[in-house]
Length: 54
Image (tube, rainbow, N blue to C red):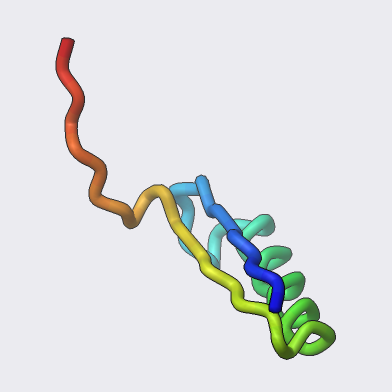
């Protein structure tokens, strides 16, 4: 099994972003042809990162 990490770094919604629609098409095709692979998606705008200070 192959592990794939797909990182999204786009603040726009899926309806307003061509790159999100391309991502969806890519992942759909990838899943179709690589049924045993594990795909993890991370959206940097939905993650909760700790604030770093100096």
